[in-house]
Image (cartoon, rainbow, N blue to C red; front, side, top):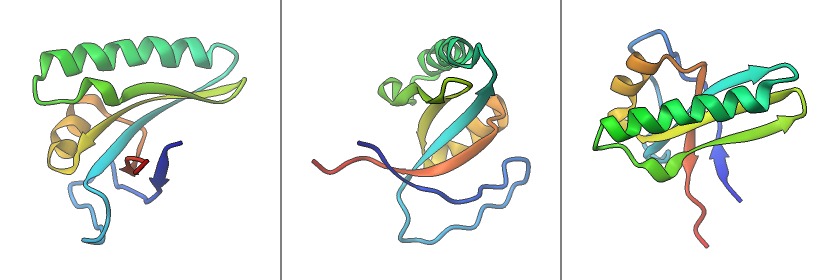
Length: 104
């Protein structure tokens, strides 16, 4: 189970407001819709993994896909808050969420 605290991030801007009590990880998300959404999301996650391999400071374990339904899927990468601006500007995600790792 993954717990996400959703907030709005201004992806195209340079200013992000957040509470200091929020998590330190951000999930950058690309949305795909249509009958081929799952395949496209899976393909996009391979490109995210390639990017993470080229950038040694990124965690390769926090890259993946999620199927919302049979017509909508998403690909994501989770980065530290300090890395978010650089990754956001290079990869142009559709949206972002604060991410909390489960404490099992």
